[in-house]
Structures are given as structure tokens and as C-alpha cells.
Length: 92
Image (cartoon, rainbow, N blue to C red; front, side, top):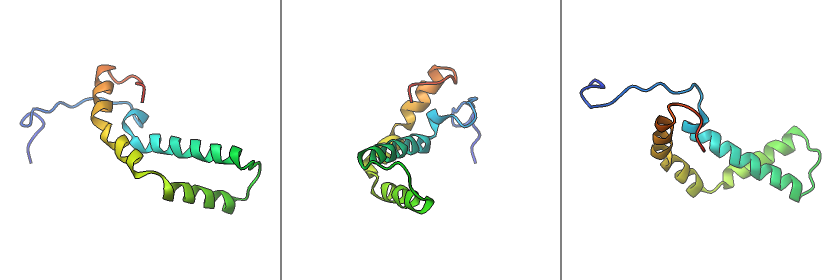
């Protein structure tokens, strides 16, 4: 296995659990927004755990794959922004 120096890589410090480099956090935010919008549209003010679970699973099963792909594809840009901001929060 090659070392970081051999492949001209650099070890960087990043914030623990940074949402900027954790695409699943962005997907979960979009899913949560979709669930909230659905609750407003359907006037859901109360539901059982099972009802909520059913809604969550339905949203996850129908979530657009292209949005997931675009989020993953944005990782290079996210990492570059994080490097530029020296580990501080970015727009992601």
C-alpha cells in the first residue's frame, strides 16, 4: 500500500461529524422537509408511531435517485470548499 507522501496526498483536519462532508445529512434534511410539507398539505397534526414510520418509509422509497447522485457527486466541491474555509462551515 502506498503512503500519503507517495501519492502526493495531504492529511487534513476536519471537524468531527461535519455535515459539509456527510451527504446523508443533506439527504435526511431533504426527507425531513418533504415529510413536513406532506404533513402540512395533508393537515396531519397527530399520528401514531406506525403511521409516521409508514410515511417515512414511503418518502425514502420514492426519494429521487438523481438527487442522491447529485449530492454524492458534489463531494469534490464540498471538500474543496471545506479546505478553502480551513474547516469552518460552508454553504452545504
